[in-house]
Image (cartoon, rainbow, N blue to C red; front, side):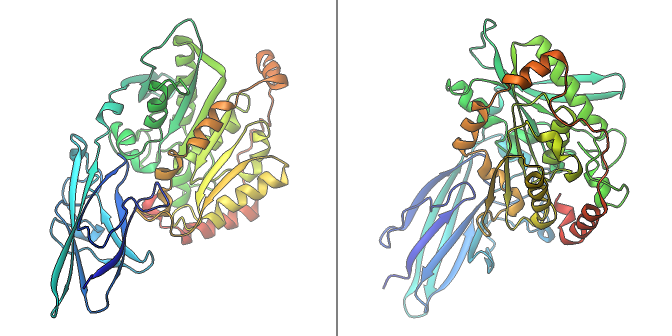
Length: 424
């Protein structure tokens, strides 16, 4: 008797199963991306069988070398629970810093047993590249800002075949809150928001420079690109005020543009989570500067949305994001864009598509969207906007007011209660 009739191995990055199941095959091998931290196993099996699933590697969180069962960490050999919401078992892949020194190999064992038929065993061998070769394409440097006395470490990728006779676009990547207290390498380990552009560039496609600035705690435990975290803790009245680190990023961009042959018509800005809040604000503060903006799991200040009227936008969000809840963040942003007559593209991933660590982490999928990357590099400042930029005439709305109206404040207050704040 065949105990398992269907088996799917699904990761955030793709819709389809990464294995083709055959009831007569008991061993499978699959390779997952560097920033893959979980796989969803979905099974169909005969009712007289029970299922037990285990992995031979620990699963721990990034930045915490010890395991904490209260946070869902588990040790090798422990039984992996069934998640009703997703209709399957989530195999967590270790994301602690130490595991990125080498490739990760995990064997998942699926035992299907019954008292009458005994136990049948299936194995899935998972391989994850450490991403070390891509990370080594970035060099680490530091920029000191005298006004704010901020020393900002940053990673910079320059094409291996950099040619001083031509100009290159540059992609600026703003990390999220999770990376504020972690090493700079965390951005390149945990996400492909920067490394994917370097990988394309090294292959001769969309050649560019890639900048990954680091927001360190300097003045306040809630230091970030904007006052988002202060707002969450009800210490300020808006999540959209720029913090000093965002100003320092802008000055760092200017420094690099003086040092490298960078095309000022092709600066591309992207950010994830609190970095998306920061990306919106930076684009609003400098409405003439960026040829394209790709915010992921973030929100913009509706009161200043007019500043984006000349900036091509492609917005990404998951419909069931439990942290930056769409009804309080994405929806007001889109409504404001619509109200201002601003054209944009938006991808709202459906519920249950992004499952680990939660739907908030949809950037695992976003930066693998080749269409998005090619769209970004097809954008450039030109025409009347470029003329105004050369003359120093603002092309967008440079209103200094950061305030939000009462309706938006009420929406934001509700969002604080609805979101899983600790996961910001």
